[in-house]
Length: 490
Picture 1 (cartoon, rainbow, N blue to C red):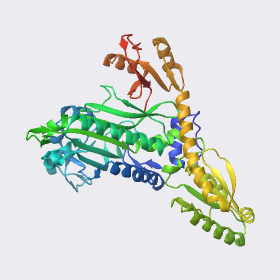
Picture 2: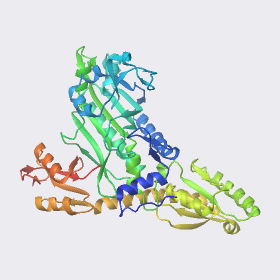
Picture 3: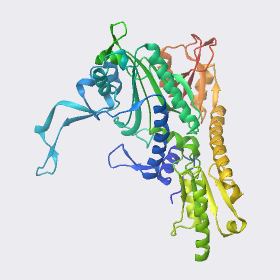
Picture 4: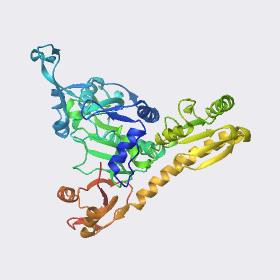
């Protein structure tokens, strides 16, 4: 099996190696796209299962809208179009035909109107919303969609940035601005709950600057996380869209007072980028590490034997262990493959990040015990079989907590408060892991742009959970009341 490049040697290659050895994904023949392999897709399905329930528990319903969007719909919202224009894939013809040189595009099949492969679904969905919404009784309209989208990327990296990716996108319509704002903030909280309590990744919720907000939005909120190389990764966004799209697509309703009004809207989403966040937040130089609550495969039982007699006894006892542990979770595998040695199985499941391994052989059978191996710490624990169920339950919860606390400690150790421009410059120019820098900013786009151009650091967000304090902008020294987070980012 391929040797994994260490994080210290080459972090980018380490990331790609983890994806390869854990069998998560591979590059497709379609440039910039990836094939998500069964094990990688099982992790995405685990994400979907948990998050879909959280979304439905807040009153949203799933629907599906077309992949193709008429160009005329996109042009109705100019700011939105400007945000995606350079990334759009365009369908211009509707058939192929044979020729002496092989299959070609039939020049006579040119579409009367080009179709855009969805980069996001605001336009196609809001055109439909205008037909669904008539009265205040139709509101709020709370819709979620699980789908694929296409954004034409020049530089791609599996899960983090690909031409086609998977996501969920929520779209809602409300009677008032206050209701829409509450919805946008609520869904940011749902994402924060999911990422912290299931993916075990600590995040900072915040407001995006004007230059970083979603095209066409009134306000954009995000949750920002720190990867092991100190770079930031945006792991979820929620947008208060105001009435920009409502006015563009005539999404109106008759209020209780009989007056016709435009709705207030939100959109929010997370994508397969979260798989990349999971890899980069927790994994080590031996492979993937997956927190137990979100693991598609939580426990693997590896039987150990040499003779056929030992095999019969050990496998029979191992199956009893498997059935007993299924009370905790169905995602438990007994690896009874004959063509692999126990050592090669240990290595495979370690690389795939299965949280807990149970080793069970003739000696364990004699002692009526089993050996538990934690993926995160490699700690081995011998446990009596009559205590196994409770010990495994406690251990999985402890692992979830420990993985989160380790990531949080790393973020805290690599977060800085800097108020001097020279120190700020030196930090981003010289520090190998630059992390999060909390500094004052005057709110001027020019300062934000100049810092980015000079240091390749961006304002990740204006943290929501902070008190006002008097300070001076790190770039121009003008008065400032709040700190923002500067970081290099993916």
